Structure formats: C-alpha cells, structure tokens
Length: 468
Image 1 (cartoon, rainbow, N blue to C red):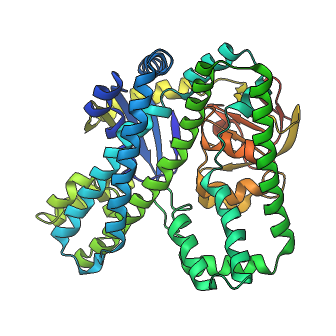
Image 2: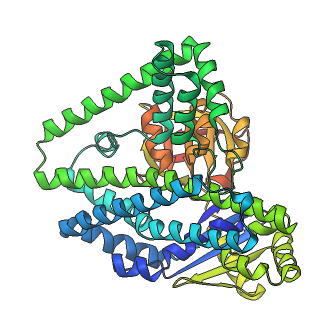
C-alpha cells in the first residue's frame, strides 16, 4: 500500500504501466490488478500481495538463473532511455502557448506514451523484484548485514548528491575564469532542474535558481568544506566495498549478482530523472490548456489523459466530471491496463480491509542503514509531500511514505529516516547510506502511527520504532 499526496494525473499512469500487456510479455508476469483511492489530493495505491510476491519471485528467478535475461533487459532499458531523452529534447523546443487545444491534447497523449514506454520495463525491473532478489543474495553471499549494505550501495551517487558535487565543480571553474557564471547556472539547470518536481510540481529549478545557488556557495566556505568531505566519504565507501569483495573472494557469478543489485538502485534514480521531466512538460500542456479553454488547472489534473481530446468537444461535461472528482473521494481499479471507477459499495469494502491492516501496534521495518549506531532518538516530522519539508529541523526523524529527490534538502537536515515503503534499492535507503544516517524502510504504518513532534526511539538492531 502506498499513501502519497498526489493528484490523479499523471499518477494513474503507474497503474496502467504495472498492469500492462507489455510488462507481462517481457517479464512473464504483471501486477494484474491495482487499486487507487483518491481523496482530498491524496492517493493510496494498493497492490494485491499474492500478485506482488509472485512477480518478485519469478523475476528474481530469471535474474539468478538466466544471465541472458538481465543482459537483454539492460539493452532494452538503455534503448528506451535514449528514446525518452530524444523526446525530451524535442519537448524543450516546443512553444506550448503557440499550440492549438487539439495539438496540446495530442501532445499530452504523446507524453503519456513516452512515459509508459519507459516505465513498463523500468519499474518491474527493480520495484517488483529488488527486495526478493536482495534477500536471496545476502543469504547466498554469507556476509554481515553491514557488509551487505556497503556491497549493495551503487558506485554511482544519486543525482541529488551529484548535484552538490557538480555545483562545487562549476563554482571552481567560474573562480578560475574557465566558465561564466551564467553558463554554469544554465548547465546545472539543464541537468538537475527536474529534481524537485516529482509528479505535480510546481517547483522546477531554472538557471536563475542555480545562479543564486552558485553565489550563495561562494559566500559559504563551510558548505564547500561539507561537499568536499562528502566526496571524500564517497571515495572511502568505494574503497571499503573493494576491500570486502577482496576479503571474501567472491566467484565471478556472485560478482555479477552484486552488479545486478547495484544496477537496480541506479535504475530507480534514472526513472526519476526521465519521468519527472515528462511530468513537468505534461504540466506545461495543462497550463497552456487552462489559458486557452478557461478551465482551471486543477480540473485538468483530475481528467484522464485520454479524456483531454473529448474535453474539446464537450467542455461543460468534463468540467462537471473533474469537479466531482475534485470534491469527493473515489477509487480506481486498474486491471490488465484498463481503468474503471468503482462503485461506493466496492470502494468501502476495500477501505474496511485497509483499516484492519492499520491496526498493527508495533512499527517494524528493514534496516537500510544503521548510521553506525544501534539506536537513534529524535522528534518525528511526518512528511506527506515535499511541501512539508520546511518543518524539518536539524536532527529530526523524517517519517514519510517514501522519499524522492525533492525531499533531499529536508533529508540533509534530518538525523534519520523512516518510510512506510521501499526496499534496499529505494531512494531513502541509498541516500541514507550516502549520508551515513539511520534509516528504516518498509515500516508500512509509520505515517499512520506517529505525528509531528512525537519523540521516538529507532532500534537499528531489530528494526523497530517506539514512542518514548
């Protein structure tokens, strides 16, 4: 179950992707049926446990038993990433305001198609299988939990960490008169502007933002020292990883498995890079339609992409439909790539089942990073969206459904992280290891059990969280 502060579109594309025929044909399995409950700008996405476990086991079997399967997957994903990049370059040159409503609706459909084309292969490759594959691999390697965390952390930093390093590098080039301040800012915007956008934005970092960041960095020698130290820590982790590999003398096959678990974490981050940019351009389409058709942006966010072309023929009808979705709760069933809105009776039955699941008393999760401590105590700050990040103070414990690059500023201030979702390759897990901070993932009900300013104790030995 995934509980997030998100609007209907492009969120629902996830359910189309994970129940599609393309995913099933490629991986031999799909999620079959997914439910999404939307209310007051929030979404709860529900996967059926039997389908989830079946998919994880089948794909993990393919990774372990059929080397050619993963090799082919790498090739296909690289091709799809290149296609998405080409499409994004074309989108950057489009004058959205100059397009007719018909052309905008068509472009929205093209953006959705590009998104699905990549997501239908990317997400099953890591999201469905990472936990199952990781659990088997750790048992196979017979290493300690701390050693496995080092081994399963990719050699490549997340984009959020790379941004800090690139910011410093660009600043040094400017100081050496090898690059103009404006060119440095534009380069950073081109490569990292998408980081805070997520699904719905609205924040997108442009060259003016990075111009301010470069100037601020110049006035802050302490921040430059911190970035330099983070670079040193990263190199130390690479040396530590090499030493563990050398000490255990892993077989070539086991080294290949380690390469796979590292690759899964990288694909998580690559997905955000491509898809957050597509979400941004989809928003540009809706903002252009808002002006041309005099329909509020939020109404457009509550129309399926497939409905936009019909909107042009019957504006009043679809304004009423989207307004009804905005002011009331509803539940979607996506089955084999087809969506329907459930009846109130069907919806309420599923909500009762969810309510029973949330009655569990103990908050438990998997230790994604110990932060070199056995216990960590602090104040909880529940983040239901990146917009809540400002309330996080130094040393607080972030409790979130999941994290993504748009949480990174808050994560730097926080002392630890707890997420309802996620596995060893998720964003929170990787960032926690990069930052050497305690992190529990897959806690399921943490956002329901804790509230802001609760003082809690994280047990990093047993993976539990208790009020103190």
